[in-house]
Image 1 (cartoon, rainbow, N blue to C red):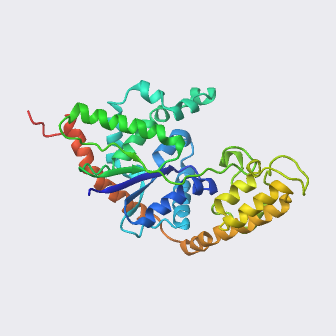
Image 2: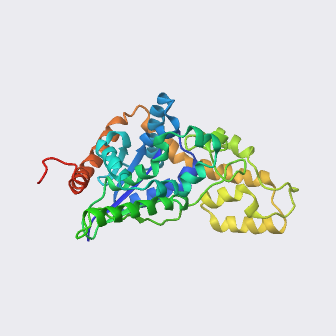
Length: 345
């Protein structure tokens, strides 16, 4: 059996919230705990520049914030199979990105659904940097910088449904590279989606997406009083009387309870009561406040333990591990594309 490698990550654009936990970190923790995979968790600070290049001090702080949030929820780079990789510190990855750009077509990049959706905004279309326009290929380089390049190995990427298009592009580019430059023996490993129980949280205002810019988040670093305040002001579906029946699917409080309440049997009974005779929103929010603070307490304790910790060495070690993995990849790719020395005439 070959190597089992996992690559996933986040842009470093600010502290993380519960939406990040439900949509990514929960699955990452499950992957880490199996011990079956070589895990590279990427802090994508270069890709953060595609939209935040005008605020370098905030970007630097975001790297620290995201790293501490990862550590606080339980990701553990002390494990020999877990690496926190700072994207900017892997120059081989940047070189790989440029080379893969040479075989990606402009049409397929522009056809990327996520990029197309972003460009629907006229202001984004006017101000988007060239780096923003090519980030789909840059993400392909992220994946293949740790490509095991061994028969029987697996390159896995855990993503949400909205990121599947990026993986299809990665697979297309890997297959094209192999077809053009190494038709008798595959060099790049077409990645596979690592499917898990990935959820999504609405914002506290009921908006479909939890977003820092909209001010509708509950952050992983929020203290108990802040959590209580945010839940108190949370949207709770259509207006209704305290004892008027309602539909749980229309009440964001239930969406949060389904994601975090450890007593799912009791929650099912509560939902039935809500449908049949109603439950006051104050009672629902009280339950959610207790549930979320109980959930966040272990992270708060770990965060206190981390106070004063120098995270730089964690990022140095993880980035060095990624560089070691990427060196044979970039060497092989450059030789195949005839851009390496010495030339073999």
